[in-house]
Image 1 (spheres, rainbow, N blue to C red):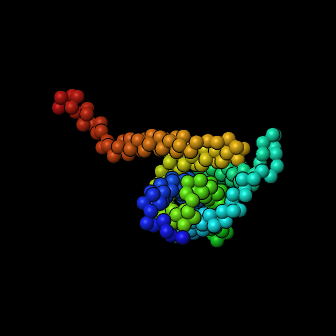
Image 2 (image 1 turned 120 degrees about the vertical axis):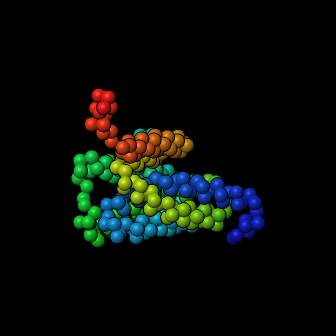
Image 3 (image 1 turned 60 degrees about the vertical axis):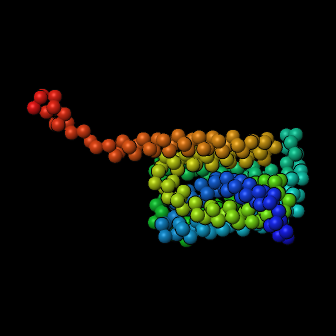
Length: 253
C-alpha cells in the first residue's frame, strides 16, 4: 500500500496534491471562520477544530468510497437538454446554499442585524456545525474528484488530505481572527464565497470554470484590500496636526 515511499515521483505527486488540497481548502477555511465568528469566544476554537476535523473525515470517507464517487458522474436525468448527475445535484445544491448563506451574512453585516455571539447557546453551536458539515460535503466532493484525477494511489491521496487539513488547522485561527478584526475583509470574503457558489452552480450544469481564474481574482482582490488596510492604518497612526502651532508659525511668532 505504501510502496510509493521509495519512488521520488510519488513524493512529487504528494507535494503537488497537498499544495492543491490546501488551495482548494481556502474557501472552506473562510466559510468556517465566518460561521465560527458568530459563536461565543469560548466556543470558537472548539467549533473551528470540529469543523476542520469534519472536513478531513468527509474527504477521507469520500476517498475510500471512490467507486460510489465515480458513479456520481453517471447521468440520472436530462434537464433542458443537459444531462444531470448526482455530482451535479450536489454541486448545484451546495452552490445555491453557499450563495444564500453568504448573501444573508452580508445583509446582516450591512444592516447591523447580526446576533450577539454571547446570546447564542448550544442550539446556535449545533446549527453552525450542521452548516459546516453540509458545506464540507460539497467542498470535499470537489477536492476528492480533483485528487482522483491527479494521483492513482489512494494512500497518497489520503496522506495529502491529512497534511492539507493539518495546515488548515494551523491557519484557520489566524485567518478567522484577521477576518473578525477587519469588517471590510469579512465582506470581501463573503463576496468570494458568492463567487465560489456561482462557480459550483455553473459547474453543476457542466460549464467548466478554470479554477486558476477564480483564485487569481481572489488573490488580486485580497492584495488590493491589504493595500487599503495598510493605507488606513498609516492614516490612523499619523500624529494630528496642531492647529494653534501652525497659526503661530504663520504669524512669525
